[in-house]
Image (tube, rainbow, N blue to C red; front, top):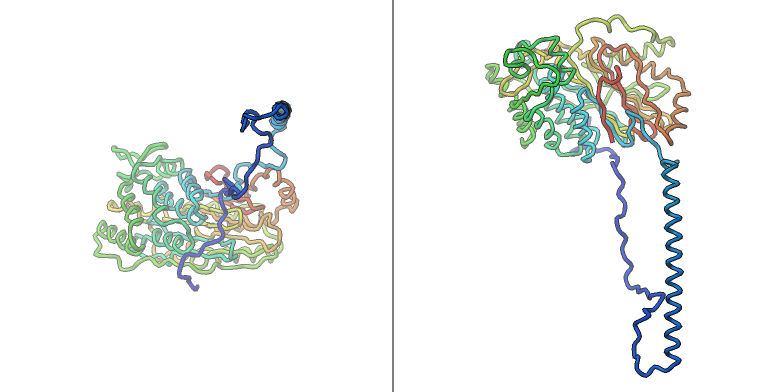
Length: 500
């Protein structure tokens, strides 16, 4: 892919409209009083009787005009008061509309952690685009969800640019070894590359929130607490355990000062390469290595495409599960009888990978989908004390990243009611089958539903459609609909969302 010299920006929605606070005053004009000042009589001496009578006539006329003016003012006050009371009793004007949960006027983000969704929203309000919000939330998740993601994870991403109509895939490169059984961390260079090419806000701004969480502390939320309860704290102390070695419980506050220092150095480094080399050097020292023999090689490249009657599908290339996803969709659609009644047996198998997903979208249809994994829950369970990073056990033999196949459907119709759909899933051994099932159900949804949305959106946004799927983990859906951003998840309520 030809790379441009600078960042590639897309058309960005304003979070508020700027109005003229004041108007320029017209120069060179003077206004004469309608009624002359009654007591400003000049050259009083020498006035004749006729002049006095004329003066008193003007005074009386002025008083009469003032009386009429006061009467009109009183009448207008009563009329306006009655009008306000009438409006209050009627409620909002009929041209207004309200939004149900999951529907936002400008942009939205959904992730597995409330703190990270809130952090993504803050970046949107600060003028960031969906890439800024998604990358900032991903860095936040690397702090608060070390069981599923982190700086030791691998990231796959899919970005759709509503201004150009192009879709771009973030690829981490093939899994490489840092040491036997330990995957080479590639999260930081991958996220920096994504932001550098497609983001808007300064890179240090995205690191402020995650650094603060790691330094000042974050609360163990339900997903992390469940993972700790199931897996125990072996290999995770002192980061995620009490003084007696027992795992931290729900609501416990913990810090990761070593990780905070890494994030701060990444924000201040003159180039991302220096930050990445410093991180690998510290990890190498912890492991007794002279120095890593390889460095991460993330790339941005055109997404895979598949044309359908309903539009164009985009997903990530090999070695992700994107090609498998497209093959499954082609097979199901060409057969004419896609089976949606039951879950594929493989989806019910145990051993779901430690993975995480998030999505960000704006009302114009720009979308970022991110999927990351440390392979097993808590990865290798090998903590690098100098960096506060849990290393993954993603190794070179992992030829296919079966946990990654984000999907975008761009409508080829002129109807802007549902022009872009994004799906990203985690947690199931065969994510491609789960996403296939969700997309087929979406394509076979009754057409009357879209017409119902068309008639509703001027007054009240209809509920966001929750995708029906048999995925055992998490599936996120984002939709651009009538210049509004819609977000939902399976299971419902699993992933907090925020928007503007």
